[in-house]
Length: 241
Image 1: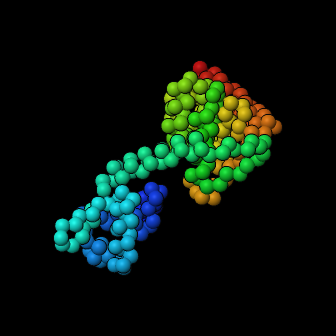
Image 2: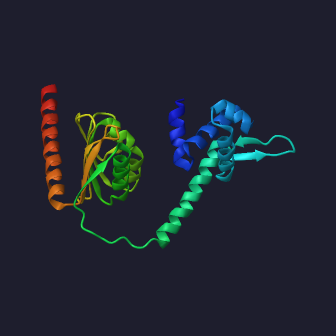
Image 3: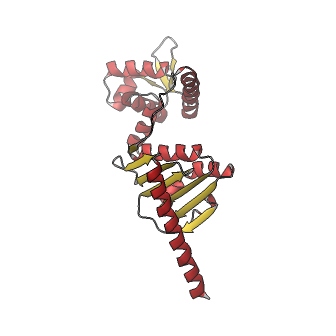
């Protein structure tokens, strides 16, 4: 376990870095007083007591007071996470109901930066797809998008994938190739395009657009690629015979 990774993930659930560190300490050592938590984490006692009380307020810790020292104990991780998710779902419903309608504007050529943001955009494009999608990417990227592709397949969409072997079961039409590492090309419903690199770094960049000319160019490029792959496959079959 990489402690820094765990803390970073916990911070996504409305905990500060210090609160996440204390939560992890409670998980590892069981119930502790503020003094004990301070000794174990190196956080000053004055800051520890404040953060432990905030953990309790946020539903991540419980407090035991029985006339003696005050002890703090972590709430079970799954229980804490599920509580946070329910709260977020309620907030989502409220915002969807009460947020003013977004002013529509014609999309241009938009730059999406960072692996997480690009991955999220690809997910949402696939989940929002209604008829067909074309995806050319390395197997590693396909695997990251697997849940969205499985969901799209369950809706009977046409799914064309160009990638290395191992992704066939996710596609209705599969073409074997070896795309460049990190390369991502996605077209949904002949309407939207996402193209660029997805290597897992914060510096990754993709272009997203609904502009008809870019969509047409990308579609034509993928069609030509598919024709070449079909020709190569037929040639290979003749050579094998």
